[in-house]
Image (cartoon, rainbow over all chains, first blue to last red; front, side):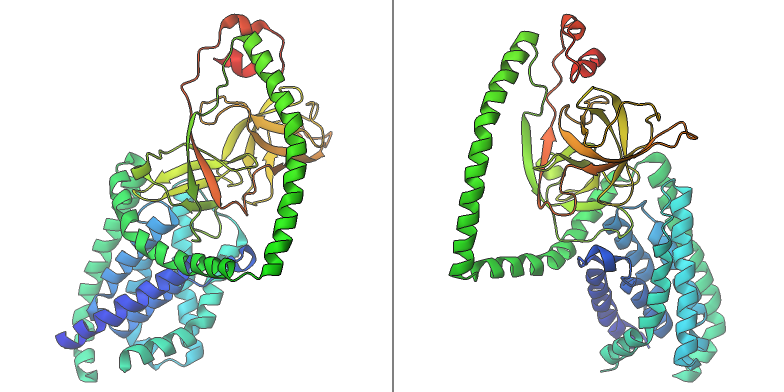
Length: 158
Length: 301
């Protein structure tokens, strides 16, 4: 078991780095708001797939990376990601037997929760972003979840 | 495998809860420490160095592509470019003749006022990194940081005018908040009559607004706004934008003024980071001289 977990670390780190890159690739302004939170989805994936390989640690580290890159108050994304990754881990046994549609719906709920925590911390620290478009990310994320989960499971099952 | 997970599930949940609570408390602590005590600057600077390779890795393919495209442009394109550049040079030189005359006149007037140009003497050029920071905030990343002496609050200009200011400094990079960011405000004055006010960003790259002008204020479409130099953050006299539209609703006490920024906020690649010279103490006598556009700044000193 330990060996399997350790073997997971490499694809985990690799996919997280790629996702981090995708988060900051420059896009035209018009479609920038439609960019899914790749890193968040990847963290959810690993929290569901192999929580014992350090899903929460990954969530915390990824959250910190997002905080630094986006230049928001330190700990904001970390908090949101840790809470939602824990939730995802809690739901993982059920999620595995869900159909693709219900999986996507669950991911939508998780992403909405994530976005809501960000929104709340934004407001609490005094720089609220109230544009409606920030609530688009959960929808987009839920839509690409089957694609992402499929390709990620290819990556580590080989 | 399955059996292991099932037997594990119950025992694991409490461990998950504990770790979740621990990590959340840690994150909350970070948020509070960062917000309230502002003690995390050093940690953030260190972390930004760690993030730097990722940012460079993302930016470099785009820069490489631009370089490749540039080195394979055809002769025709180059010739067309040359013709265009020559044309522009002629126009520019033509304008420069007037500029020199104007500059001489300005210098004469300044000499009269025994005042020196209070504009930054030292500057470095920072290049915008091809990295998206946040879709909902008007920020960008420059490739100069604390290593080059950049500091928080430093004025950032481009060829057209005021671009923004440094919001956060990393070791090798710095984050610039644009004048159009919804959280950004800059003291300005109308160049025509010296009326002072504050230009606030809207969160939309093409627009600033002047929310603190009364409906009776003397502002016209096409008015040039320049930095007033009040507050000491920005050098005085740099263009910020031109008034694009004014809505005066007589039921309201404040006018709704839309400003188009002078800097090419969505296009500029090279930005100027300016060091302000410590402002020379303007002689009080000069303040009495009726030279409207720059007089308020002198009075302020």
